[in-house]
Image 1 (cartoon, rainbow over the protein chains, first blue to last red):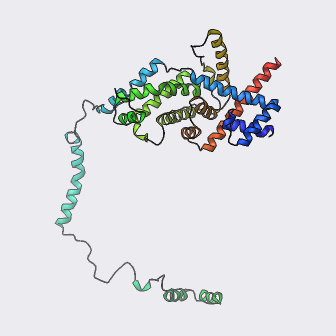
Image 2: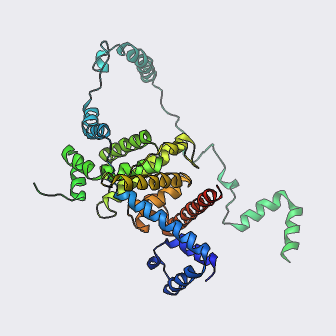
Length: 171
Length: 189
């Protein structure tokens, strides 16, 4: 074992050699500690650190009393929040129906009602087209993606030269 | 009165039982506060973290899954996340200036002379802790002070076990180097 290996293991597993993963390395470390001053110094530093942590954990740390009091009030504080009513302003109506929005709603509805009544009164109907005379497209001009023949005919009708080029490529 | 386990108390806290909450606080508050104080190095920050942690416990008790981790692990996880939020807000994730305020005390049951020696060691301990970045400090505290296993520490820090081991190794190395440097300086003087 060299100093680098020893320090790597010391930093990874700590100063308790029994916690080192490899039994051979444990044995090697014990032997190395006897011969290397640097290893001993590093080992003592980590050992001291661990002892300080243990000593600190044995010191009975107490949370401050005022903090405890504040924490104990958390359920009460949050229960109060849950049940807090939504306070309304003094002049705010308890229902929108009792408020001042009625005139606005009626004013918006009047044009709709008048337009509907006018439509019914003039007897307007939806456009009634003859069956089969669609104005949107001529079905005969459609090119079907799954019909190579029709596609080719359409293509060659407009670009005869390109059609020849396609034949050349195919060969 | 029947003794209820932490998990049983948590189930009652979910149904808003304030008495169970108080009992849980009494059981865990000192250990959590010790961790918060040593991690942040500042008593008022530790108090803030504690309050935020326990508010979260009360309002989100349902997010604790009984049997998945121990309650103390979950509480430390909540606290640690609060600490990370705090550090992000403070925008100082490398070395906390707060740490200069850390004042740990030797156990009162020691003889005066022994207590004085112990206090020197603890002051030194606080200085050593201040030398390492927060994440390494957290890993060292959780394993060596709070007594968590590597797996539990990994859970609290939301890291893999390998990453936690690596964090611990870097922390030990940083403290070891700081300690050796301090000794060398003393020797030279």
